[in-house]
Structures are given as structure tokens and as C-alpha cells.
Amino acid sequence: MEQSSFSALPVNPKILQATEALGFHEMTEIQQKAIPPMLEGKDVIAKAPTGTGKTCAFGIPLIEQIDPTLSQIQAIILAPTRELATQICDDLHNLTQFLPEVKTLVVYGGQSMERQKQLLKKGAHILVATPGRLLDLMHHRAVNLQGVKAAVLDEADKMLDMGFYKDVRKILDSLKGMKQMCMFSATISREVMDIGWLYQRDPEEITVLPVQDSEPKIDQYSIRCIGREKIEIILRLMKQFEVSRAIVFCNTKYTTGMVSEQLHANGLNTACLHGDMRQSERNKIMEQYKSGKIDEELSQAENAVKILGGKVQDVVKFPLMDTDMDRSFVVIKKMKPTAKKYPRKAGLPAKEPLA
Image (cartoon, rainbow, N blue to C red):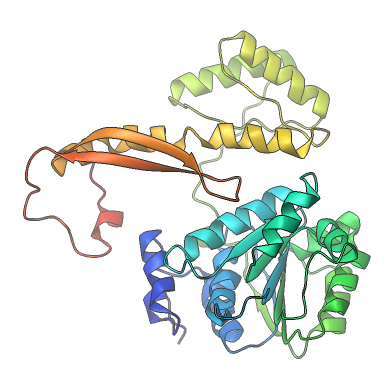
């Protein structure tokens, strides 16, 4: 019978400490099925919907296999887009928060190659990359992949459909020491199967169906309307549900700009994001969007801090060195003793959060 708890995994206790800190207690289906064979060093080809926890499924085994005493890249993760590559790296940073000796780095196009060369010289154990940028760095002899033992292709179907088939093959062909190759994909296309036949050895085949339990816990609504009603409906919904931040997806770049302008004209702070923008501009917009998170969390946690006898005294925001990521220190002053019933047993805060 498959273990469902992260605590049952035979991995570094500091990885389990990180999953606990992140509020991860029970593994999702893809994690239950993929982590054990990857820990055994087996190749894996997994078909699973998005939002099912695939990053943890391959991230935990990769981190477990890293030897931090070796100053070389030991695992690579290829992703089709800059945004996904950045998200994967963020998730890996969270999983290694108690393992500072394990270094993770992300490289992608649209940013200074010289800057990325400098970061690579400082060393990394796990490299997350888009195929095009990694090939560029290889051609400039700026990255050494001789120590890579494991490779993961995330959203493999999308990556190969986007025209990266030849790039992926060139990268995999260069990994002379590769002992493990895993692919995670929403669909198993002919191109994905081709890569599997060429580079995998008797892979563990995993399928996770898009059942209700695997779907993101998001309420979904459909509203029929004509074009000129859309802005009014968006504004009404944001007010009705007291939404402080939202993302509006549009089907064209023109529509994206138009919607952004109309919402701005109605008093909202908006930004437009599309593929024709420079990567630095896209990063800035996303950082500005995410930077409000700590303020939102503090607002939600105000009563809980008070119950525990504290008062927020200061918030210090700062960027992590050598990354594009922001972090915050929250200084809480102790105003009165905390009730003896706190801290509560493990798992209870997640089930019964302080209101």
C-alpha cells in the first residue's frame, strides 16, 4: 500500500521539515506514485493534470540525491516558459529552506546572459532552465553539465509542441553522465514518446486522471455577456467578492491592453502583460503584483496575532541576493503571554486556523 504522508518518505529530515513548514502533510496522487521510483533512481514518464503537485513530485527526489560537497550541477530541469521555470525555482527554494548548502539557479532568455554567467560561476547544484537559453550558455561554454546525473522535463508536451524538440535532444545528448531521465506532462504526445524511447530505460509509467480530488480547489463560474458588458461585470464581481488582486486573461494582446486601460479608467491599479514585452518588464510587473502578498497575509492574520498575544511592529521588505525574488521580515512585539493551549498539535492549525 502506498504511503500518503510526507513524513513516511525516506528522505533528509530537513526536506520533511520544509514540507511541514509549507503546510504539506498528505501527498497528492502524483507525488505518491512518482517520488518512490525516482528515489530508487528509476526513469519516470508521468501524465498528470496541472495543479496536482508535480514540482514536489520531482523536486523532492532531486534534492535528496544532491551531494552538496560537490561543487557542480548535478540535476537539470527543463521548462517551456520563463514563468514556469521561475515558479519551479521558487518551489525548490522553499523545499530547500532548511538546506542552504543545496543551491538552485534558474536561467532563461530575455535576461542578461553575462549576469547569468556570473551566477553560474558562483555554483549551483540544480539548474532550472528554458531550452533555448541553456543551449546559448552551452555554446558560450558558460555552463558545465558533466556532473549532471538526473534530468527532468516538466510540461514536456508543451515544450516539444513549442518547437524545442531539437534543442531538448541536443541538451540530453550532451549529458554523458545522465543516469536518470524523467518527464512530466499533461498529455503523452508522439514527440514525448519519441524522447522517452531515445533517452529512457524501462521507465515507470504513471497516469493521474483529472478526477475531482486532483483538481485545484477553485470555484468556477460562467457568465454569458456581450463585449461592452464585460468591464462592468468584472468591476461588480471584484466589489461583490471583495477582491483585492485579480488576473484577467484575454485572448489577444490588443484586448489585454484595452481591458487594462478601461479598468484603470475606473479607478483600479492595473498593468498589462503579454508576450511582446521585454522579459525585464514582465518580471517587474509580476514582482509588483506579488509584492502585495505580505500585506494581504498580515491583514488576514491580524486577529490570530492578537490571539497569540502579539502586535505587528514593523515589516522589512528586501530582495534575495543574486535573485529576482523578494522576501519580508515581520517584526512582532510580544504584548501579553500566549494561552497555554498554544502551540497546538501538528496538523490542527491547518484544519482549524485561527480566525
